[in-house]
Length: 310
Image (cartoon, rainbow, N blue to C red; front, side, top):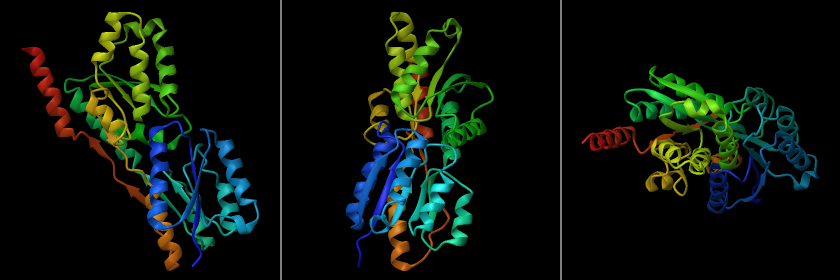
C-alpha cells in the first residue's frame, strides 16, 4: 500500500498554538506512518495562497494526498480549494467554518472536511473567567486577534454572551503574536488617556498576546505605575502545557483556556477516509476548557480578596 503524504500549512511559526500544531503534526505522522511536510505562511494570506498553488500546480506525481491548512485570511482560499480537489488532492480546513466545503463535497470524492476549535465557546469561557475574577464588575483591556480573523470575531462574540453586564470591555488588536501585543499596548500607553483609564483585568485571545501585554507594562519606567499594572490579573487562551499552563503555574497569567491542537485529529480522519473510502463528517469540533477550572479560579480570587482585607 502506498505511503500517504500530507502537506500541512500553518499561519506562522511565531505563535505557541501554531508551534504546538506543528508538534502535533509530527507526532501524528509517526503514529500513523505517513509522510508530512509543514509550511508556514508568515501570517500573510497571499503568501499562503501562492505556496499552496505552487504545490497544486506541480507535477501530479508529486502531489500530496491531502492539504491540511489553517487559513490566514478571511476567505479560506476557495479558488485554491477548488484547484486542489480538481487535482485529486484532499482538502482539510482547520479552525474555520466555510460555506464552500458543502459545495465541494457534493461534486468531488476526495476527503473534504473541517476540524475546528469551538471559538464561540472559547469566548464564552473567557467571559465566565471575567465573572470569576471580577465578581463586583470592572473594566477589561481585551486584546483581540486580527480584524480579518473569523476565529477572533467568534471568540469576541462568545465573550460578550457570557461576560457580566457590569464588566466593561475595551478592545485593541493584535496579530496572534507576543510582539504584536507588546507594540499595541506600548502604543496605547503613550496616549495621555491611558493614564486615566481604570483597568481591572488584561485579557487576550491567546497566551502569547497576554504575555506581550504584560511585558509592555513591565517595561514602564515609573515604578508605581508598573507595580499597579502588574498587580492585576492577566488571562490568555490556548492553554498549552509548555506555555499557557506553565505561565499560569508561574503566576504570570491568572488563567487560560485550553484549546486542543487539531492537526493530529484531522490526519487520523484522513487516513481512515482513504483506507475505508468514506467521507468524514463535514465539521468536527474540539472541546475547550478553562485552566484552571472556573470553580478553582473563583475560589482563588475569593481567598486573595480575603487575605488582602485582613
